[in-house]
Amino acid sequence: MGSVISTLKSTASAISYGLKTVLTLHKQFSSLLERASSEPGFPVPEPTKSYWLDDPPFPALCDIQDDKLPSEVDIVIIGSGITGAAVTKSLLELSDSNLRVVVCEARQLCSGATGRNGGHIKSAPYDEFAMFKSKLGPEDARRIVRFKRRHLEMIKQLGKGIEVAEVREVETVDVFVEREDFEKAKKQVEDVREWMPEEKHRVWEAEEARKEFGMNELAVGAVTYTAGALWPYRLVTSVWNDLLKRFSGLSINTHTPVEKVSHNSDGSYTVTTPRGVIKAKHVIHTTNAHAAQLLPPVRGCVVGAIAHMSAQRPGSSFPPTHGNRSWSVIYSPGFDYITQRPDRPDGTAGDLMIGGGFFRSREDGLDQVGIWDDSKNHALPLMHIRGVMPSIYEPNWASGSSLIKAWTGIIGFTAFLPATLTMSQTFRSVSPPEVRPPTRLGFFRAATPLFGRSSTPSSPRPASSMMQRRAEGKRRSLLSLLGRKRKRKEPEEIPRDPVRLNFLFVGSKAAGQTSLLFRSRYGYFPDSNAFSRPLYETYVNERFYHNQPVRMEL
Image (cartoon, rainbow, N blue to C red; front, top):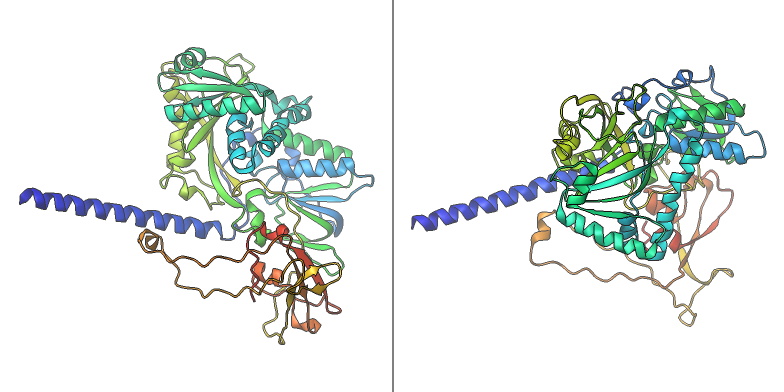
C-alpha cells in the first residue's frame, strides 16, 4: 500500500512539475511576443563601452555635427553604421550631380551594432547552403551563398590602404563539442561540395583537430574554410572620413536622433529631430534593429536582440596565430565566435575578441529577444563567454588571461532573410479624424484588368465570392493546444493566380477613404486631403500576400 501511495505521489509531483514547466514556457513566450511587437524606442544615450570605439582614428568625427541643420537636402540617411556608409558611398560616387546628403545619427558616429560586433567577415557555406536549400531549393541557395561569400573580397578591397582597420583573410575553425552536431556538419560539407565545388572545406576528426589546433578532448571535430576579420569601427569611420573630404554636399550630424518622418503633399519628406527639421526628397533608413521605431509597418518583422561581446587577453600558453585565425565553438542551438587581433608591436599575441552565449541566459535566449537596451551586461552570457576559450584549450592556456572589456550590442533579426524595402507612402502620415462621414468601398474581380470590367460566370476566370469574416472565438491559450479534441478549421478559399483586386475610393475629400489594403494593413484610414476626385488602384496579390488567401476586411 505504501509503495502505491509513493508511486501516486511521484506521479502527481511529475505532473505538477510538467505543468509548471509548460506554464513557465507559456509565460516566457508570451512576454517575448509582447516585447517583439512593441515600439523599439531610440538608442539609449549611455550604452556599454565597446572596445572597438577606444582610440578612434578620427577623433573629430566622433561627435561631428553642423552648427545648424540644413533646411532642405536631396537625401537624409538615418544611421551611420556600415549600411549607412555603404549607401552614402554608393550614392555619392554614382551620382552625376552634387547631391546634398545629410546623415543623422542618434549617438556618436558608428556607435551602434557596427561599432559593437565581433569583427568577423564570415559566412559558413556548408551550413548556410543547407539552410537555404531546405527553404528555397539548391539553385537559389547557391546564388545566395555565393553572394554572401563575395563580401570577403569586396571588404578586403575596401580595406586596402586602411591599415588601422586590420582587414585580413583568415582560416576559420568551426569547433564542435557535440558528436551529433559534427556528424550533421560533415553531411552538409559533402552536399555543398557537390553544388559548390569552388568552396574548399576541410573536415578534421577529433584527434587530428586536437593535434592541429591545440585543443583538448572537449573538441569532437572541426571544419575549416576561408573567412575574414577586421576592426569594423575603424574601417567604417575611415570611409566616412574619405567621403567628407571628397564630397562637399555631405554632412554628418551625430547626437541628432530622427523622431519622425512625415510625407508632404508635394512628394517630399519632413524629417523631425530635436535640433530642427529637414525637408528631403528621399529618406533612407539604415537603423537595423531600431527600424520599426520610424517604420511601424515592420514592427514585429524586424526585432531587436541583445548580444554580448568581450575583449580578453589569451593565456600565456595559447597557440600563436598572429591574427590569421578565427573560431566558432558550435553547440546546438547556439555558438560562440572568436577572432584574434594581429600581434602587438612588442611581438606578444593580439587580444581575443570573444562573443556569444546567447542561449546561456536565464531563459535560454528567450529573454534576449525583443531587447533594445545596450546599456548593461547580462551576467550569465558574460560568464559563459569569459570561459569558452580556456575550456576547450586547457592545458594550452595557462595563466595570464584577463578580461579587458565587456559590452553589449543590439542585433536586428528578421524571420528568415534580411530585407531591403521600399516603403510606399501614398498618403500623408497624419492622425485620422475622430468623426468621419459615411464611407462606401467596393471591390470586384476583374476578368481583364486592362478593360476594368467585372467578371461573370462565363468569364475565363470565374468570379471569386466575397470572403466573409469568420466569427472570432475565444483566444486559445497554450494549454488548450494540448487537448485531444481540436475543432477543424474550414478550408480557406484561395483564388487562382493571378488575382487582381480593384479598389474604388468613394466620397468627399474629408471622408478619409483609402484602399481596403491600407485599412487591413494599418488598422485605420489615413487623411484623404490628397484626393481631388474618386480614384482607382489595382494591386496584384503576389506582391503583398505571397499566395496566401486574399482576405480584405472593413
